[in-house]
Length: 282
Image (cartoon, rainbow, N blue to C red; front, side):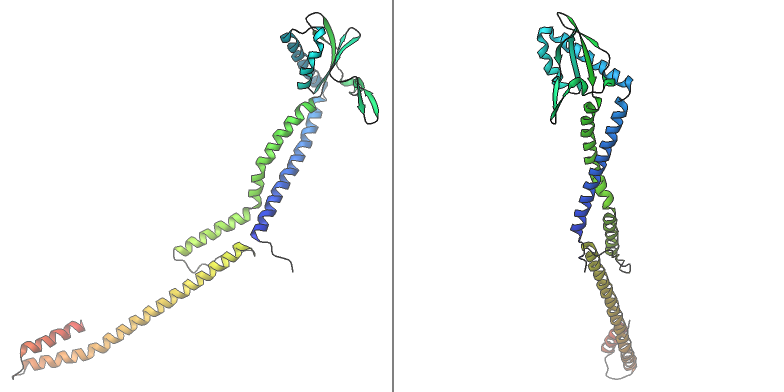
């Protein structure tokens, strides 16, 4: 026999479902983000504008610090903070600086850094002016890496924010049932014992509804029994009143006769009997 799933088990399943839905949505949004970034930065105009912006920022960095070609190693700080930008600086044909090593290990072989990026992504040479000379530089900007990490952080926050929504959607049935039971309990409190309590499922809420419906039936039976008892008491009183009325009427009549007869009877005493008989019969 399949074991019944209780309310706590259902809540655990809803939490797992919400977490799984959030994770799947996050993965899907990351894939879409990656594709969108590749399509966007694969456009030559977009890539050129992004590279030109990096050139301007590097030139501003050099100007603010008054760097000369002898201070070329101080570009490491800017290179680390702008890891998505690859650039090589030349003094005529002599290389002065590379943001990455000229040779980079890849598995068991070695590749040239300029060959790691497709040729079409290397844009024309740009000028960089140091305090002592003017140099040329070749840039490549990996916009996908630059924005993908930030985008994933935002998407992660979105997935966390959507978790309560998924949990609410998966628990709508239970919430509606609780609200239904609440309304039926209020109806019971108002005296409506004819409307049955709705029983759904086989969890703890269903057991609670079953108990409430049993309580409703018990209260309704008690009310019916009390009404029957009250009717019997009223009927008994009516019958007793009728049974007493007849002899009292006779006593009243005989007393009136005795009061009016001549003799030793005291009219005042007889009148007292008449008054009491009238009081009991009224």
